[in-house]
Structures are given as C-alpha cells and as structure tokens.
Length: 163
Image 1 (cartoon, rainbow, N blue to C red):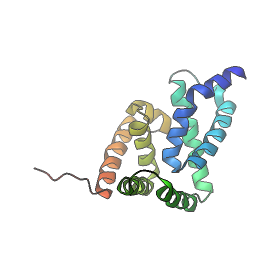
Image 2 (image 1 turned 180 degrees about the vertical axis):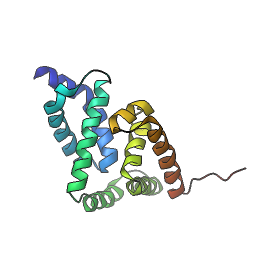
Image 3 (image 1 turned 90 degrees about the horizontal axis):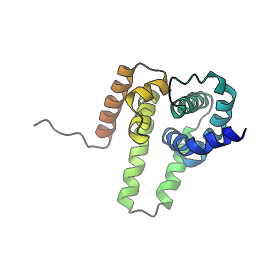
C-alpha cells in the first residue's frame, strides 16, 4: 500500500492537470482524480509494462472520466465554474475573457479531440502515448490533434490566411 501511495504522489499532478482540462474545473478534476486512482488500484494487475505507468494511469483516468461524463450532467456545473472563474480571476479582464473563450471552445470539441489535445498539448504526451491512453490508432490521434487545434483556432479567431 505504501508503494501505491508513492505511485499516486509521483503521478497525481499530471493526472489532475489532464482531468482539469477535460472536466473544466478544479473541483470536478480533483474528485475524478481521486476516483480514478481508486480505480487504478483495482486494475493495477492489468499493467503489463509495455507502456509507461503514467500512460497507464492517464488511460484509466480518461476511461473513468468518459464514463462519468456519460452518466452525469456536468455541463451546468462547468458553466457555473466558468462564471465564477471569470469573476474571481485577478488577471486582466481581456486575459480572463480569452481563457474563458478557450475553455468554452475546448468544451465544444468532440471528446476524443479534446482528450487528444489535452494530452499532447497540455501534458506533453507524444502522439503514441496519447494513442495508448485513448485506445485509438496513432493516425487517428494525430488527426484529432490537428483538427482539434484547427477548430480551436477558428473558434478563437486565430486562423491564418493563406499567403
């Protein structure tokens, strides 16, 4: 049990950050991370060593998040959290508005694109690691990242004009 505590200590910040990008707020991410680590304990015997432990744990966390998302309505809670975030941020209003717009644009992405972006851009996973976490082919993850990035840029008005 002590070894599992060390495992949690080593990976909890990465898992919480990943789930925060998926869930949209700290409170849900913390709850999801706690439950995902409990689930990891239950399925740890399935870890075969072909991937990194971080990849395995994030995969468990992603699957747990996906199940929770299907079974509960977190969208209203996220909207409330966005309003609170915009009201309480000490950063300049323009930056807070941009952060809120980005979060909403992320929420509008299909869940596989959002997860691929959160892993590859937010957590510095390689495409191969993200493919393993998400249970998708490598080419699909690359497409999700490319298309997701393009959709975010379009939603944020950042698309470049062809020269």
